[in-house]
Length: 221
Length: 221
Image (cartoon, chains in turn brown, purple):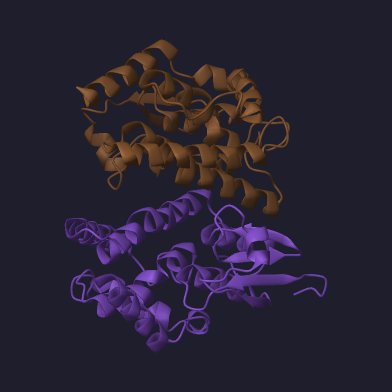
């Protein structure tokens, strides 16, 4: 990193969206400083830099804020040279954008609905939607990673499925995802969780499991 | 367009999402053939090329499909030279992606909820969310267009507000948007609706108004 570059990242430990930004920065070899936020007490600085969504991650590059995790990943890919996170070919770039959008528009909301919707019927419908969306993603996996041989935008977007989803399932006693039903996603999950850069940003598993258990208990109480 | 390029677009007349793709293609001067679909009877070809969402627009470039309107707009910007739809600077590109995502994640769902949610309280909440999101967008407008002096990604994404939203309001008797409350958006709307390329792709106003009126009637009946 050039000495005149100042890179800061507003984070909350355990956030899958923060992990996306961190993986992008680390793949590029960008050094950055973490500014720790808490869900219950957001700093004035975070609210200043992300007044619209008031959420982490926010990337601060020479005092200019970039918000929204996938926007940050694309920004990091374009602002720094080195490791290519998106493919160079326009068609493959469009496919990467399509699938990362699919994960955020279809997979994530379905899992959240399945886990935490107050209405039982809605939760069941969410579970069905999650299984369908995961099946579509399973069928899309053709190689080691979504992007081919190396970790790219879609892998970064989908990491939630390999790490957070199994913990949510375990904490809430849900049945959305299993290695038997999604063998290609399972194999991919193993690869990505053992990728050295990804490994380096994953939050402690036990802490996160305890957090999700508390979250389920507070709802059922 | 080079003679070896084959560009087709699956469309439904009246769709704001199709309009996005058409504006991008026309700004670049790309010639394309329209393949007309109908909401009630989607062709096998559409289902083949967009099996995930089964929706228009689908861009077919030399038989390769690109789906999702904003993904198409970015693809067109990268696959053809000429008119720049996204800025060249990475930071400004990130801002354009942030705001176009804001329109699709916040403005559009709020308007749909305000207009067509079966629950009256939800409709009222949607109206409030729509007004707030429009106010945020109003405050973001600093120049003639979102991108400066020329039509760009955010203007293309936001066109819905200038053309479709007033028709939905009129058809459903809603009060979400008015020129007095959003003077900068109103001025921007006048500019973009009179842009020669945009003008050329807008569907007939009266047909669309009749369509929305029928839609409101069928719900209240």
